[in-house]
Length: 330
Image 1: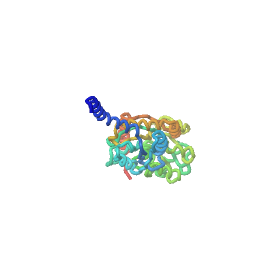
Image 2: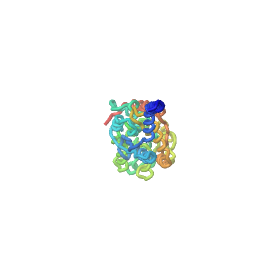
Image 3: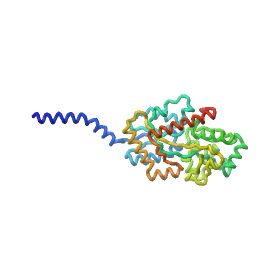
Image 4: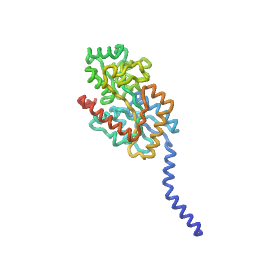
């Protein structure tokens, strides 16, 4: 080998040694995802989280060219599935779709198998939707909220309400309602909003404080009746349903929200790519229509902004739980 060729060869070896890792990293980025992606939903199928996870999955799968597989793992007010997600590999193929319940859980469960702030990377807040007071019209025959309130006050303990489980937003929304109205309605916890909602439709429970997203189709179908939307404004999807403010409950402001997390230690490049892909899936025309139909809005809080929002929610619900004298986990 001539000196000239040898020199060129050594330069090529040095260059390859330096650039090979970078090329490998770039290759890994451009080919993600190269297989189906798992999204753990910590509630049974049919609940509020599912109402957003499934259309999100459909659009994500189209954009990514790989299936986003919904893995429902219910139980413990969403904490069982969260624990499983916290232990999943941070390889870009495992994600977790949590909800407001996971900001409540630290104040309710004394021993969680995970820490929502330390064991996950917050990627994106995908939907916010107000809570709605819904009843089975065959069990609760009140024509409007005022009549319902009068009936409940005159009959303490006669009516019951279903929830996604003790310590969930459905449960605490009911407790907050009871505190602010001086009423008593018996709490019936379920293993997720889906089963509770089905029992409401079937007439096995009377009332539910549900996220508007999971109740919307059933309200429109006449299977359940909406009497009040939480918060200070009516929802565009249901303009005829009065809000809490106009019904004399200005402080009854309960919002259900849903977000995407990844297990901690997921590489930053994959966090960025995944966040953008989830954002694009939320903003497709198809999902804009789904969100609007369920009375939801896309907040677009990502990364550190989502983490800050989560911290505020944890503090808020901790105060609510303390004011209620704690929550008994069934």
